[in-house]
Image (tube, rainbow, N blue to C red; front, side, top):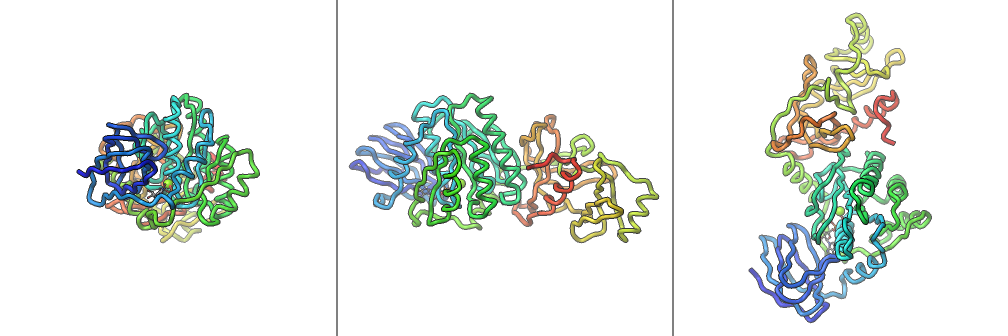
Length: 446
Ligand SMILES: Nc1ncnc2c1ncn2[C@@H]1O[C@H](COP(=O)(O)OP(=O)(O)O)[C@@H](O)[C@H]1O
Ligand SMILES: [Mg+2]
C-alpha cells in the first residue's frame, strides 16, 4: 500500500493499472467524475488514467505488478481542454457520438461523458459500445453492446451489459452496414424501452477511407446524434470533420492526448482480443444443435430441397467433382460440400452453387447463438456438422443456460484455434451472404 499526498490543486497524477485508489482527504477529478474522502476507483491493467487534484489531496493506492503512480507536468495534459469542450454539451435528451482514429482516446472520452451525465444527475445514461475490435470494453470482441450507467466508472467494462449484437468480425470495413443497422437499432431501443436521459456512442477507429466516412456520417444521421465529438490527431480526421460539418450535428473537435501516452500496437490489440474470447468462452461445453430447427442464417443447410439421384449425378458430372452433400435453397441457388480446396461459386445452367470444402467448419469458426430479434445469446465455436443428421456441435461457455431462447445461428468470419487465438479471417462468408440476399433468403444487411 502506498500513501501519497498531492496538491496544491491542479496537480496531475498519471496512474498506470492495475491500481486501486482511495481518496483519504481532499477531492480528485478523474475522467469527468469527482472523488471525495472515502470514495475509490480502479485502473485496469495496461491502461493509463490521468487524475487531477481539485484541492490538497491525500490518497492511498494498492498497485498491481505493473501498476505505477507518478505526478506529471500538467502542461501537456488534455484534461482541462477536454473538460471545457465537453462541458458545452447539454447531455439531457442528447445523443452524442464519439469519433476519431485508433487509440486517440475515444473510449476515454466516452467514459468522461458517461461520468458527466451521472454527475449532472441524469436518471439513466445509455451507452453504446460500437467498437467490435476494441479492447473488450462492454461485450466480447466481434460484438457491439448497449448498457446503462448508474454511477461513476473508470472503464466501460464496469457497465452492466444489457444487450449485444454479434457483427461477425473485428474488422469493421467488412461489416459496416450491419454494424450501422445494429447500432441504430440499439440506440432506438435505449430511447424507447429503457427510458434513458441521454445516449453516448463509442465508435471504432476506422475513419480514413471513403466508406469509413460514409459509415460515420450515416451513423450520426441515423442515430439522430445532436453532437459529434471528434478527437483529432494530426490531420487523420480532417475529411471526416469536413463532412460532419455539412450535416445537422454539432461538431466538437478536441485534441488527442500527448504521444507519450501509451500506444497499443496491433499485436497488443490482438492479444487482448484473444484474452477476450477465452475469457468469454472458457470453460466451455459442447452443445448439439439441430440445424433443421435452429438454422445457420447466413449459410442455411438442411432446410432446402434435396435433389434426386439423377440430378445430383448430372451436377457431379458437370462440375466434374465429388460432391458430399448438396441442397437447393428456396431462392434457387444451391449449396454443396464438395472436393474443392477453397470456397467457390459455380454456375450450372443458370443456377449458382456455393461450394464449400469438406470440413470447412473444422478448426473452430466463431459463431453466435441469437434470439429471434438477432440479439446475442452467446458466442460459440462451431466444431462439426453432421450431414446425415443435420446436427452441429458448437462449443459454448459452460455457464450458458439460455438454450431455449436460441432461434438461429450466425456464422462469424474468424477462425480460432484451441487456445482461442485468431488464426484466419474467413472472408467468403460475405460472398455467401450476398448470394443469399440476391435470392431474397437473407434479409439484406444494407
Ligand atoms: N488523457 C490521457 N493521457 C494519457 N493517456 C491517455 C489519456 N487518455 C487516454 N489515454 C490512454 O491512451 C490509450 C488509448 O485510449 P482509448 O480511450 O482506449 O483510445 P481509443 O478508444 O480511441 O482506441 C489508453 O491506454 C488510455 O489509457
Ligand atoms: Mg476504444
